[in-house]
Image (cartoon, rainbow, N blue to C red; front, side, top):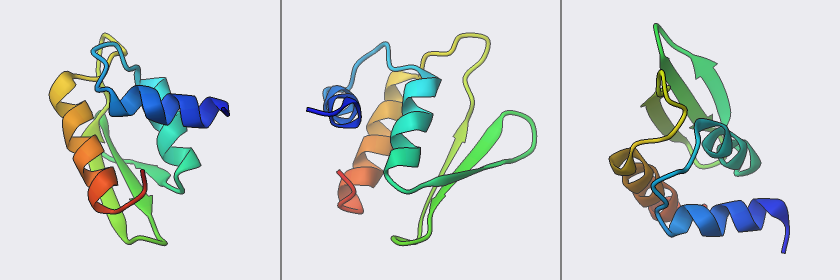
Length: 82
């Protein structure tokens, strides 16, 4: 099992300790590109699926909030990316 596959499986289990770096790595591997917005806002766009995910980068902690994990997971499942 590859690192990316393990990362996706971990994400599907909705962990409470999923980091921003793990999320960015996973989204990049799924074909998303990022664009920095104003402040801590970051947009992730998958051109192939025409899918946009907008998030605020967590601070000061680097852990993604549980509700964001759920929202991103729903989006990725709806777009059949995972």
